[in-house]
Length: 267
Image (tube, rainbow, N blue to C red; front, side):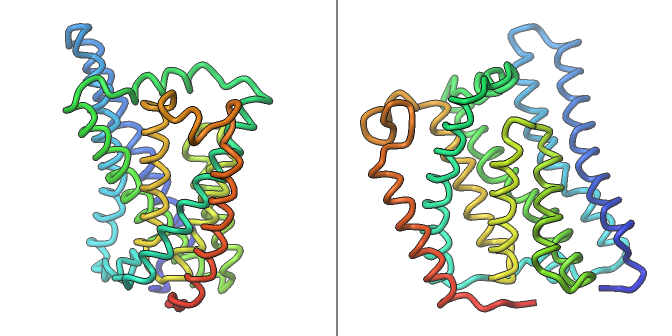
């Protein structure tokens, strides 16, 4: 990267992007709380979530455009082949299953904080329109913004600056986990971040990681709304059923094996 782009600059713009998203979302939610009728405040909260996630990438884009940086290269926006898409999807299925079981184990050992229940209530499908709104915001917009900011911009810079892929992935993943402001899910988010970082480095593109990120959010949204319907097939005694866990392990094996065959590390 340009020699004038320093670690201080990079972390500064990442922090600014995250903080600006929080500020914009908070302003919208506050305006809704103060000025809208009580029955419309829920929609204001959804809108705050939606706009906040989308705004996260704005400061970064303005920064790069002002510097006349090549956006596609700086943000790791590169096509991936169909075999890479398939293997990334298979790997994603396996990882989501294992991380879900880890989350269920954590919940059985430690009482989840109340804000997680409130978050789950916000993600309920009250109507078809709200379901589409949440699907777009949670499954598409949020993963895309976060992958561009963290794996596309931050991790890529750290890889080039430090010449140490492992260090770049681990530091980016830690920062990614911390900005979610959720200590209860810190380990799960960190592990997910490491896998997202690996996929970005391995394929030289944000899109493989986007598949995992979007799939993870999609499954979480489905479990929030239809968890009872999955009892007896996916879950067993409150945990992921053994046959699903076995399938997850198989998917991880074939996903990694296939990815090593189909993806080449690209700068």
